[in-house]
Image (cartoon, rainbow, N blue to C red; front, side, top):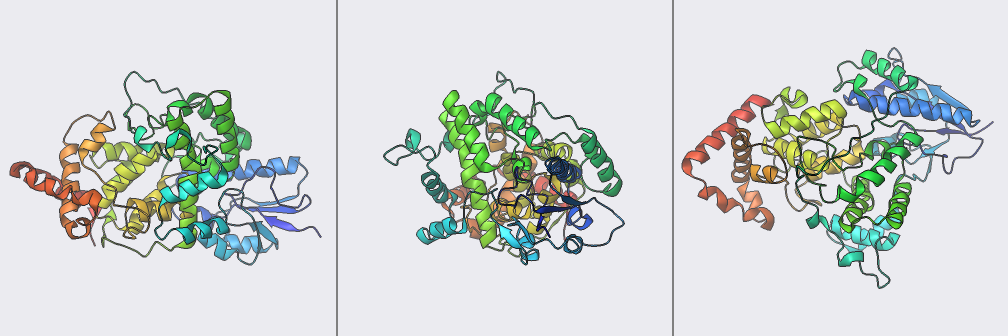
Length: 480
C-alpha cells in the first residue's frame, strides 16, 4: 500500500520536495479551520482556490490525491476527517496549534523557512537579548548575502532603513498593478464562500489574488521589474492615492507555499545582476525576507505570547473598527483597504491601526483577532509576535525596544493626508496614553524624552485634544 502524505493548505510547495514520488496526497477543506477565527472571505478563497488548483495539478502529474471539499453540513473536525485517510507524514506545520495536533505524523522539513532550529539555537546562545538587528546580521553572514570578501556588509552598512522613510511625491507615478482574473475554479470557490461564510469580513467577489505557482511567479516578476527599484525609498510612505505603492504583496502567496523564500531571493539577485537595484531597496527587501520573517517565525516557535498584557488593556473593538467608520481619517482609510483587499502595508498595520488600538487601550487578544480576521497573510505564527509583541507591546519588550505610536505629525510627515479634526483626536490619544503610562515609559530612552513635551502644549489645546480622545474611546470601544 502506498504511503499517504497530508498536505496542509499553507504547504502548497511546487514539486512537493521530500515527498515520495508514489505517495498519495491527502488534502482537506475543513469548516472548523475556515471558522477557527472569522477569517476574511478573500483569505478563505485564497486557500481553497489554491488548494483546488494544486489538487488538479498533482492529478495531471499522475499523483493520487484524496481531496475533501468544504461541506458545511459535515460536523467533523479537520483532524477527524484526516484520520480517515491514515496519513503518515506532513511537512512540519508552521503554526503551533497544528504542530501539536499533528505531532503523531512524521514531519518533513518545511521549505518555507530558511532558519533551522540549530541556527536559532546558535543565535540565542550568542545573544542575551532578542533583537532582530543582531539576528539579521547573522543571517546575512550565514547565507552569504550582500557580504564583501572581507566579511563586511556591502555598502558599509548592515541596514539602510534610515534611507527608506520618504513620503510619496506627487511627481512619482505608481504603476498600475496587474491583478489576476479569476478562473472558473476560483469563481466556484467564491460562490462557496459567499454561501457558507456570509458573516465573515470582506467580500469574496472582490478576490483578485494569485492562486497558482505560475500566477505567483508572474506576480513576483512584475514586482522585480517595475517596483523593486523604488521599494526602499517609499517603503514607509502612506498615501491616499494608492495603498500598495511599490510593495511586493507576496506574503499571502509566500505564506501558503506558492512562492518559497529561497526562490524569491534567487530571483531578486538575478534581477540585481541583470540590472542593478539601488542598495537601499535591495537591502530593505532582503531584510524583510531573511530577517524579519525568519525572526518572527522562530520567536513564535519559542515563546508563548497570548496571555501577556503589559499595559492591562481591556477594551473591546466597536463595530466601526470593522467597517472603517470611526471618523479618524487615517484609521478609516486603512480599515477600508483591509476590508476591500485583505492587505495593508506594515506602516499602516503598525503605526496606524496597531497604534490606534494601543492608544485606545484595546485588549491585546482583541487586536490579535482583528489582524487575524482582516488580512490575507494572517497566521498564528505571524500575528502572535507581530501584534502582541511588536504592535501592542503586550509582552513588555521581549524583542521590541519600545511601544510603537506617534503623534499626528509623524503621519502627516509620511503621507499626503490632509490636515483636519482627526489630528486633535490622534494627538489626544497619543498624549493620553503617554501620560497614563508615564511610569512605564519614562525609563525608555526613546519615549522618555518625549514626555516633557506634554507640559509645553498650551492649556486650551491640551484640554481640547484630551477631551476629543476620551470621546473617541467612549464612542468606538466597549469598556468591560
